[in-house]
Image 1 (cartoon, rainbow, N blue to C red):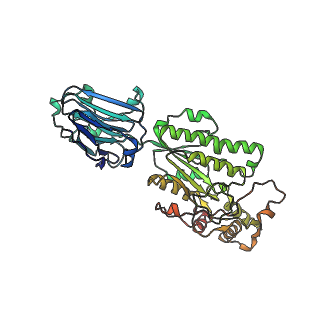
Image 2 (cartoon, one colour):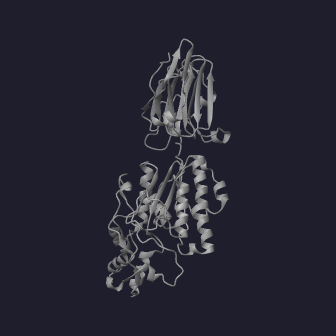
Image 3 (cartoon, rainbow, N blue to C red):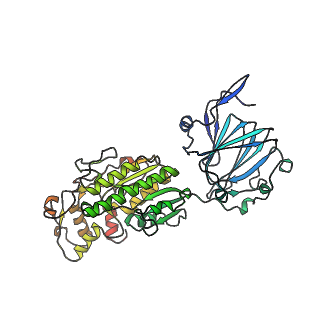
Length: 470
């Protein structure tokens, strides 16, 4: 008999992501009423905001009707409209909990959330049982080909069916499903890394080396400026996009041609990615820049408003504003990026080796950001499911000027730091066509540290980089 007036409550199960809910059912002599799914209240007790798009009902005439075990390529929220069921769920996803089993009896006062890849089965315990479920993808014959199945009688799962299977009503297909030893686990949705051949993209390749769930796309595989790149991909197979691509030619962005290119890559393409993320419930990771600020503050935190000085900074700020409306987003703001490829540190090391005594700007203050640490920070945010939002992500340590860093490179290269002389930004760029630069670029790292990420000091990372280990 349905229990009335239980408080709404969530109960974890042995299968990660599978959560059993008590539902308040209000009844009297006329019958009963319940809010079967109420987004605001359910989110408050921990139900994922899974974005259902289809509601299905399975009516079962007789007690003993048994269906499953089917793992589907979408999330589902299951409840009973009338009658009772014995439900059985088996984790058929890749990973350490593959084969884990949970069973429970459901009546109209209970519901359960089943993530993608967890096998779902039920047996009716009363005649005239109606089983209902919300799913966050549309059923199709093609989607059914992506199911993973397990035999209801599998000895490893050892489900104690209340009505023995030989006495139950089963379909021929369900009787023929494979045993657990022959089941191919459902692979997780993929992470797509764009800009995979850039400095950060190469670091992300190393950070995710050996992870088959991460797919890398350079411009040849995914051109951000071509709408067809967005249209010709089955986004249902992905959970996350990491956009490591950007237009970063700061000075060229001030030209008519560069301005158009910067807006196309840093804003228009990002808006398309944001649309994809919203439409398909994906997490979008976007890399931002200290250039969204004018450099008037000594240290910039995540709450500071935009104040870009030049076109590049304007496009990055506009891209950040677009990404911020994606429900599941990480904006990773960095500065003075150093990785594999041409960059300031390699230029200084080359000058030192050639005996050049350069003049280097000494009134722009900030911290280096090594791509291996940016990549590690991005992976940390995703792996730990840190709260969505903006995170500053640079290396740690005392902020320095470009001239100070150049002197460190000279010293680490075995040359005399006094070979480097300082010059103001104004004097350095006098008579040149150059974009304005923020003078102070140090980013506050407290929010990132609070997630448990240990930020490496820039000077230690620089030492290893110059020595050839970075």
